[in-house]
Image (cartoon, rainbow, N blue to C red):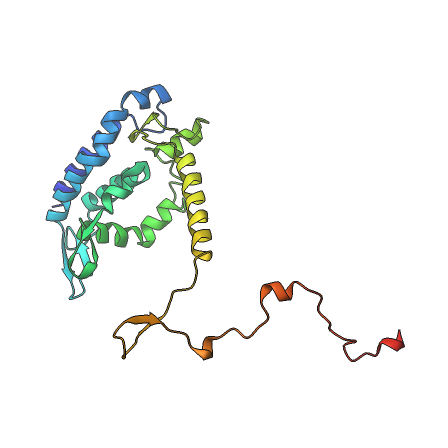
Length: 247
């Protein structure tokens, strides 16, 4: 099983490399493989994740929560550790949404497509030894991220955020994300304003004599405060008990 994990890791590493996602590639090299990268995250990696899900074992309770997910009895074979490292690199390169993809399940719940793989990845990533390596607290020192996400790559090369029609490591950007965010903000603002300006809901009751529904007015809800028109006039607050002649 350790060898199978290692072979899966080698396949994923090779696919990431062929898409020119390494941190030392030029923007031109990366752009030349944009369509391949799009296919990688949408199809190729999910296919490998599905294979790994089948290989993994684990325990699931009545609530559908998984635990003790692993590929071998020790969970720390060379193949598993290597596989975790390559999947982590893939996640840093942009495979997180593919790995954590969910689907609708019974009772309106969301269920992960690869629950055993995700739980294994999460649990192993919390091990002290792996955390120390990621934090650069081992004799090896700090590790540079080898495969970069589009956002990290663009930041490294001073490339502005992609706009509509731009091709990047995930494919073609269909919309201007900044413009869409601004549009959504204005839409929500207008929606809130329209809700605030709506009149209160009208209460209705059945007239037993006519059998018709009619407006229900309760004296308990009657506003006995002065109307806004009356409130616009001068308000006499007296001398507030201080006595005007003392000033």
